[in-house]
Image (cartoon, rainbow, N blue to C red; front, top):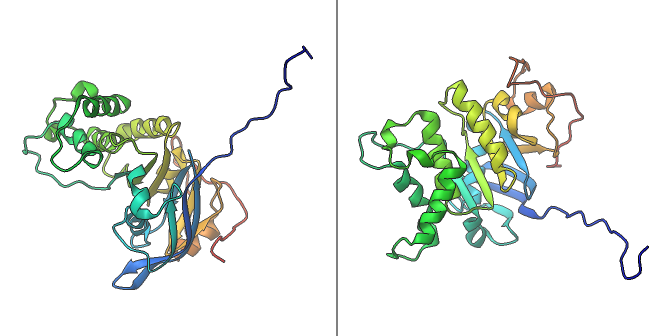
Amino acid sequence: MTKGTRPATNMTKIPQEVISIQHLWAGYDREPILEDINLSVKELDFIGLIGPNGSGKTTLFKVLLGLVQPLRGEVRIMGKSIKKGRKYIGYVPQKVEFDRDFPINVWDVVKLGRLGKRRLLQRYTTKDDSYVAEALRSVEMLQLRDSPMGDLSGGQQKRVYIARALAMQPQILLLDEPLASIDPQGETHIYELLKQLNEKITILMISHDIGAIADCVKTVGCLNRRLFYHGEKQVTPEMLEVVYQCPVDLIAHGVPHRVFPQHIIEEINR
């Protein structure tokens, strides 16, 4: 060894926990929809959550956004309370209702994502504009910045809403059925976009479409009031039957869909 040099050391970074959910119960009018949910989300995770309608998937997101208060349990975001930690979250809802004839363009929709970064009545700045431009560039929509929203396809509109979430510079992205009402070609574009975004941002995505989830996420959880999640991209028919409460056949339709491989079921909510 040359004098004055130090031996090489393994500096592998341990992923930081960005969301911690412990024994969460939540619902409406004190009627629980979510029961004893436990989940640890690490930075740059890409978790897909599947389950039937009414299983509590959207309710879980509303808890993380501070829109539904837990009945009991603890939730931490970036080590902070929900009230302080939700500023790190960008959210893309399943549906955004709007009048297609309303005169608003792509740029102005994405600029709305900067509202949470400004004081009340504060004007937009050139810094805001730079973040809006970067968000549009990341979803390959900057060239359509002046286009009316009503003229866009479903896939293009979804990209704009993702850009709106990115404009706030989130560290965590919540996606509620991002592939709903999008044609197959648009789905492929969204798949690739999400994979690219996941290189820098932690993503949680909920869907009822097992095939869609399988193509782009890193790990999968099954949710129906209670959560079945073990940090792997594997689900068995038995696990699905517990969640969907009926027999489920796993059928492959070729690329991009594929069947989940066999694994040992583990329930973290014991």
